[in-house]
Length: 109
Length: 114
Image (tube, rainbow over all chains, first blue to last red):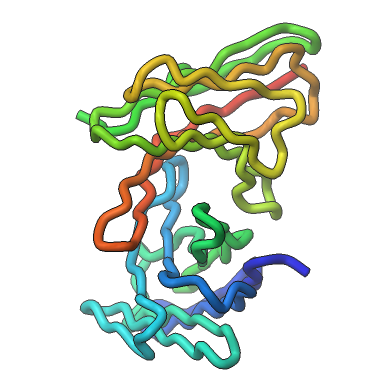
């Protein structure tokens, strides 16, 4: 199966919370990442979490890690139109970073 | 000024032509990468280089070659372009600090092969 899996689309109403989920395969990954790609731009690192942590919070962003299930999620509180983008989950594997296919977040008015 | 730049930003070429995409960085990173992005397929790694003398194939290197001319420059060549190489190409650099790696992406080169 794919190394990193995430759903391709998510629609959320403005002001609601967005939760983007990801599963990965390499239990030895020391770091897991969330990257954001805005239209017409390259990817930018949004946040990362070390594998010995369960949760990391940074302003409106909350990352949850379930290492047993190899499940990573990104929660965006109070979703705004500027959050409309593609979000990529990524894991470290054998000296490389492996990216998921990306989840396109669409904000409904 | 951008830390990772790519030229050209857009390119239209014909089947069979040789083209080169260039990437430069001012971050002083040793590691550089070339990815392609296709709708619904995410990012796929083409080649990567951990220093000037180190070049490695990624998951989809067939039809591509690279050259690491200097620490700051990493170019991607399509020796004989074909239509299924139409994609968005990203260069990235990374540093490996405190045991974690952050990648910094260029703005992308949109390539159309007719």
